[in-house]
Length: 104
Image (cartoon, rainbow, N blue to C red; front, side):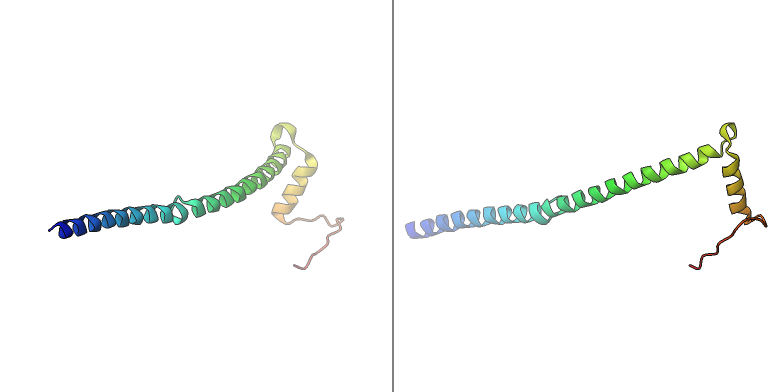
């Protein structure tokens, strides 16, 4: 009986160590490859860098568009800009203008 109780105690201890090792392995693998793990963090940092670059590009583009719109406002109307915009929208060219056609 003593040997059976001792054998049961050893198996119980091994089972507890095995369960603990399983938990540690599970959480360790998830810490590396999980949704919020180390790999996901690297991907999120790459995405944040690309989005920051795109934001900077879009801010520059917006500033250019705002300058263009400011030239067409009624309080500071630039006649040359108005003429250029009207010709572009109406596909109009003055007979005295030199027109270059580009093949694209």
